[in-house]
Length: 200
Image 1 (cartoon, helix red, strand yellow):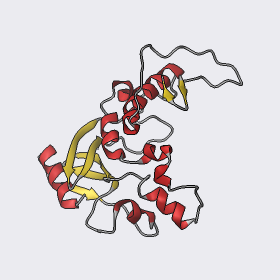
Image 2 (cartoon, rainbow, N blue to C red):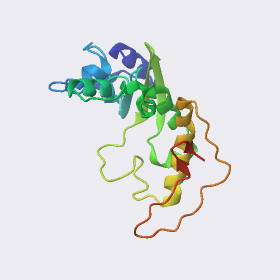
Image 3 (tube, one colour):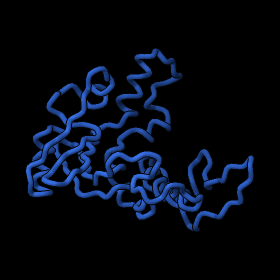
Image 4 (cartoon, rainbow, N blue to C red):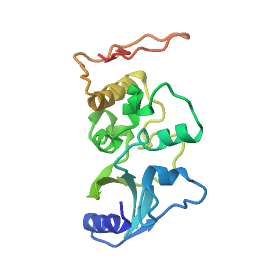
C-alpha cells in the first residue's frame, strides 16, 4: 500500500498528522518477493506515531506467502515437488490470507490475546490493520494478560479460527457441541476432534 494512502488513512482515523517508522530492507531479498519492489510502498508491520499515540500498521498484501514467498523458496532452493506447490491442499492455509486475518480480530474466542483493532485502511486492493502498540514484549500473549493458556482456552480459540479458515478450502466445519475436556498423561496429546478430512 502506498505510504501516501497509509498516511491519509491514519490522518482520517485519528485527526492528526502521522509519522511512519519504516523498516530497513537491505539484505532481505524475500521482501520484494512478498511485497514488490516499489520503495514508496508500506508493507508488513510498521510503527506510526500519531500525536501522542503510537500505533501499529499491519499491511497485508493481496496474495499470501503461499502464492509468493513459498513458491519462490521452492524455486530458489531447487526443491523438487511432485506437482506445483499451489496444487497442494496445504497451500490454502497460506494463500489469500489478507481477508481472513482481518476476520480473526472479530472472533470472540481470541479477543483476550490479540491487540485491539483501532481501524482499517483499504486502498489499492490492499488492507492495512491499525492495531494498538503494545510496546516491546516477550514471552507474553499479545495482550500481555495471559501468560500460559489452559487447554480449554486453546481449543476454544482453535475451533473459532478453524471455522473461519475452513471457508478458504470450501469446507464446512461443524461445531455442534463444546470441545470435550481431555485428561492428560505424559505420552498423550489432547485431541481437537480433527482428522485429515477436517475438524468436527
